[in-house]
Structures are given as C-alpha cells and as structure tokens.
Length: 390
Image 1 (tube, rainbow, N blue to C red):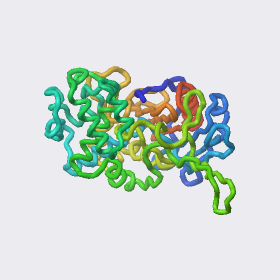
Image 2: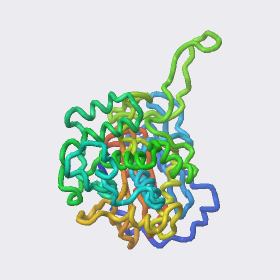
Image 3: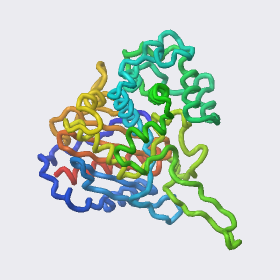
Image 4: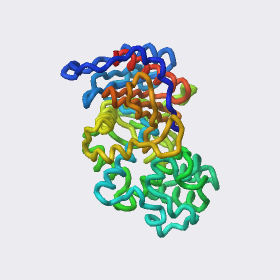
C-alpha cells in the first residue's frame, strides 16, 4: 500500500487546547455511533476505531459484520489486518536492536549479506536508507517474475525473504541510494531480513518477543486473521459448519476472501505489511509513539524516537520518516511533525493520525479495500478529530 497522506485539513477552526482527560478514568467513549452511518454510506462490512489521549484509549468502537452477507457481528476483540502500518513496527524493532548494539543505522547490505551476490551499488546501502524508502529499492517486484515466484514459495518466511533479497540485489538500484524517495515494500522486507540475519531469529518471532510482548499486544499475528470456515459432519454425524471466527477481508467489489492462499501478500514482505491485531492492541503501539514524540519515551530512548520520527532530508511537504509520513495539519496545533500512515493489502484498510502537540491520536480500520474504504476511514478519522478535539 503506497504511503498516502489523507486530507483532514478543514478542522482547524474547531480546535482549542486540550483539557486534562477526565474521561481517561472512565470507560472509553463508545464510537459505534460514529462508525455505523459512515460504514453504511461507503458500503463497508465492518469498521473499528480508537482514540488515544496520552497513554489512554478514550474512545473505542466497532460496527458491522465480519463478512458481507453473513450476520455475525464484528466485535471489539476482533483482529484487523494493518497492511503498511506494519512498517512503523518493523522500524521500531530495528531501533530496539540498534540500542542493544546488534544493529547500526549505518549497517550496510554488503556488510550484512556478504554471502549474497549483489550489484556493486547495493553494497553501501544502509538500514536507515531502507527504512526511509531512500535505498533505491524497487516499488514493485515484477521483474524476472520475482513477485510470482514469491507467491509460489513454499519455504519459511525467512527463506522467502532471502529469495526476495537475491532477486532484487542482482539488478542495480532504481536510483542512486540516498538521493531520492521511492516507496518500497521490498526495502522494509530487506530491513526485516537484516534484523533476522544478525540475530539468528526469524522476524516474526523476533518482533513478537522484542516489541509486541513488551507492549502486551497478545492478539498480534501475521497474514489474514482467522480460520477458514469448514463444512462437514459433526460428532453427531450431522452436517456442520465451523464458526466465522474473525472478520474477512473484502475486495473493492465487495467479494469476501477466506483466510489462506491469496488472502494476503506473500510472506516475504511480512515486515512491510502483514501484521494483524485488535484495534486495542494497535492503540498500545500508537500510544508508544505518541508519547515518544512528546519526549516521554518508553522501551526506547528519546533519541531513538526522534530518529524514527525525523524524515529524511530532501523531501517535499509530505515527508517520510521510518514507517511514518510526517506532515502538518491545522487541527493538530503548532507541532510540525504530525505522524500518519495508511495501509492496505487491497482487502483491508487502516489509517493512523498522531498529533503530538495535542497528545492525541486516532486510528481506524475496516475489512474492505479500495477507494471506498480509504474514504470511509478518512471520514471517520475526520469526524472523531472534530468531535474529540473540541
């Protein structure tokens, strides 16, 4: 999912300085009343949202059904695919490893993958360049049939990422590394592969142990959430159907997709975009970065958060840091570094907005891809910003 910086520009007149969040001591505001009409308007099967102030979730809600045409309601404990909002998580993992001395921001591809044949221009490319989309990594992986081969790959995710690495590095970079921005899932996949290579631990296990477990994000998984609905004979010999246990992703045309092959991108790009979790668990990660941006760090030092949130030089008004777009919005106060990112594997959509100057963040997810999903999530975010930053 290409990084998109959604509009949300018409709210500035509404905003005043925040009052101490007395509601933080109470149950979060139920946001379902905001979600329901907008989900219906944009024909979205289900949506969820959370509002974070400080380190507290002050708004939480869900609406809709897990699968179009099925009456099973979505719940607040359901899991949602985050797409490219995985990228900030991968960058955070790398920052943890840098602080441990296992990685360096200037560690190079040549140093890390000395056993992999690569074009000479790749050798000096750094971890930092990979995480800021300035490494010259390709925007797509169609060349030489690499993308198709990653779909067919039957080995481990780590082996799939090594295959991706080899396929990309045999060609020169798309541009001189460090000089241009080019959004690339491959770059984050390679950054994740650097992390698993230097630690000897598969990326999925590594990020769970070093990051998700520390934040008590117990719901996290990879790929499409849930199990395929199964039909057959039960213990009593009668025809039975298994429970629809989690939301299903839906293509832009409304077709639901069962978990399994084709329900997510290849495992090779896991570090770029395959995490799923509950809206509440994602809010824990967002709160970590909101407070880090306010000089109240946890897990990482203030310097590391500054590194993660500082865009690379030489970009335009909407700049890119490490898994975060960095922009300005009138509703967000005077703080120049509003953090945002969207994510989609074309069957789900997610978006987050963090306004450090307001100590406020909003995150929205839905189980459908396409333009309607993006517009629905944008509309929910705008309404929640307008209502909860009065």
